[in-house]
Structure formats: C-alpha cells, structure tokens
Image 1 (tube, rainbow, N blue to C red):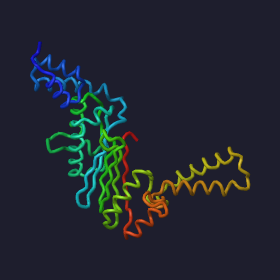
Image 2 (image 1 turned 45 degrees about the vertical axis):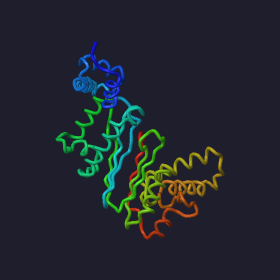
Image 3 (image 1 turned 45 degrees about the horizontal axis):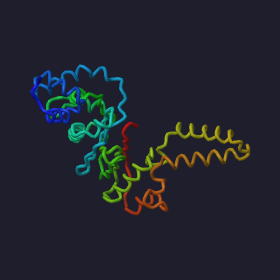
Image 4 (image 1 turned 180 degrees about the vertical axis):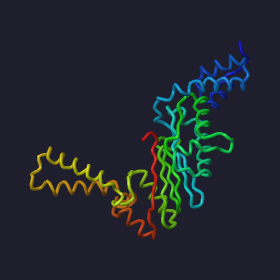
Length: 275
C-alpha cells in the first residue's frame, strides 16, 4: 500500500480541484509521492481536454482590475460551483486578469492567443487548468475600458466568487457616482447607454411584438397605433441606461444623477456568469 495520509489527499485535491477518488488513485500510482501524483493528475487531465469540449460551463466568476484610467474585466467559466469557489480556480482568474491588464486585449480570441509572462499562451494555461481541475474551463468574455472608470462586482451567493461585474467609463472623474452607476447597471441590466444606441432592427422587432400582443389582447383598431408606440417607448426606456430610474433614488433618472455630478457615461460592460 502506498505511503500517504489523508492530509496528502486533501492537499492534492486543493491543488488540483480533482475528485477525492482521483487523488487517491494518483497517490497510489505514485507510491505516495506528492509531486508525481500531481503530474499524473495533470497528464490524465490533459488527455480528457477534448472530451470536455462540448460540456456546458454555466458556473465561474467575474474578476476585474482598475488602475488609473484603465479598467479590465473577464468572465472565467467552469462546469460546477465546487470548482468555481476553489482556491485554484480563483487564483487562475486573478492570474488571467493581471495578464489582461498588461495585454489590453479587448477581443477574446486575441487574448487567448496572447503570451503570458510564463511564456505560455492564455489558451495553454486554460488547458492546464482544464486538466488539473477536471472540468472544461474557458474565458467567455473580456473587456478593456478607459475612463475614469467605475467598477462594481456582485456576489449572488456568499460562498461563491463574484458572479456579476460592471465596468463604466465616465467622461469626468466622479468616484462615488461611478460606483453607484456601476451598481445600478449590475441590478437593472441595461443594454445601451442612450436611446439613440438602440439598433433600429431591434426597435422594429419590438414594434412587431407589441402589435401582435395588442391584437391578441383584442385592443380596438383605432387605439392600436398609440398602444404600440407607447409600448415601444417603454421598451426603449427599459434598455437605455440614461432613462432608467436610478436605483438609489427612483425619483431621478440616471441621466439626472450624472448631470448633477457633472459627468457622463461613455460606455459600459456588464458580465454575468453563464449569460
């Protein structure tokens, strides 16, 4: 019987996020040698990378950094919440966002192909994580934004890392307002900054839906036009940040809050794990 203890199994599991049985088998095969067991799990895990390509990654975290007028954020996904809250996965997220801050790659493919300080590409590092943690791991979204920048990260559960993240670029620095608006975006999920940013085809589709709904409800023909336009206007206000009622003071719009602070929102990014 291999010479190892329960603490060795625990240590290996924490380092790799592999299952307890896999850790025991690796230690048995390595005759209790921790470093060899670590390599065994990694090699076996790499063989399984392609098998995991089709799996869903609906768990994970959002991590961000702000330094001066530069803000970066990424969504790192995995399969289970067990891995998502593990130290190894969280450390991987920190390592990747630090590299994103240096690389400033606003495109996922370009980021995956970029080379980290250890000489490996981001994709290679993800593949290693995939191997050692035994789950499909991927970067779904990245954002690079220049500010002044407002940042808000939200935990949907106290035992999980942040699942929602928002970066906001302001026209003029306003620290508290930047954070408040980022928090508002996290809660109300607007799609666009201004109503003029809403694509015409999206508005037209909403108009078709509004008409079909109104007819299904049996609204009178004479009133249809007014009802349809009213619903389209409501939709545009709902998806436009500046026209939304501000989360901390529903009597004011986000636009009014920004005007009072003497600033404006240039752009924003909102990530939610799995969406």
